[in-house]
Length: 372
Image (cartoon, rainbow, N blue to C red; front, side):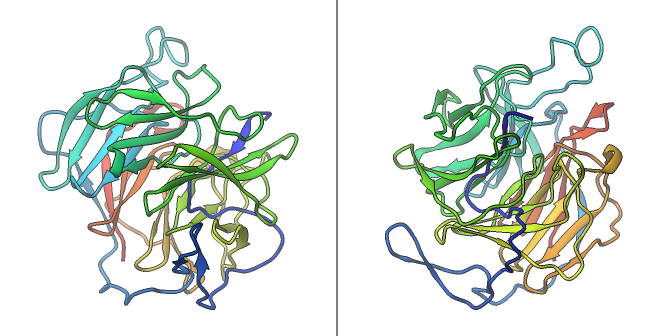
């Protein structure tokens, strides 16, 4: 594969084999202006009371619903208490049969009002956009826009685009291209929980170029972050924001299989760290994940493993205890890949929308996973 093999926006866990473990000594780090940023490797507040872990189906109220899709974008807007969904495509029901043009490329911007559990269409994009790799959308509230790094406009177009979407008019404008060499398909993108910057991790499968870049949202300018070592190459793995200046990278596909490692990126410290787990979980790719800062927990759902078999398990990784669990939950979403998964920070739950079932159909459902 000669295209960008991985990108990420601030806060991710990645993979590498230099053998270091995640620090838990409580040390703080400094931000770009010299200010202290809390080290999220230790709790910064008392943990909330435990809750029952369960899946709940949402979005059943009302007459309108967004069409099913995969490789789309979602973001949770806490100010408006809503889930936004846009982009993506449905490759399984194009005119003329499977997997031929024209694809169904939805243009509508949809919101799920989480107070009323009702879907509504609130805008229309001027052109399609999708991503073949997991990308976190940055909600840039001060500028009332969504920032999307690494979008493509059709299933066959390239190179990837960096775009800003105005949340009033839904007008799309171009952002500066990523400065990483040969960038066509960023694979992992995460955003800074503070809302000030986006971080991209790029790695290439052939020439092994690797690096981390930051997009400052106040200036729309890129800067490179020199990091010590880096995870081993993999793609189809999400980079998950894990607090200010942190991100997590779990598993993925390395060309032969799915590694079971977990990595943390400390952007301010300019270092990748391997996170040791007592019992590493099964590897997977095309999965999605969210990080719960209240309990220092990574929640993972969906994806594929060897033989492209889809996974149904809900995986919880407790970074404080360095333990993993797969609670048996019913009801639960059907197995899927290339869906979206975002954190509802007001309720401490993960929201899952869409995705694909093998090579047969896409989903249009939304589920909420209550975190413990």
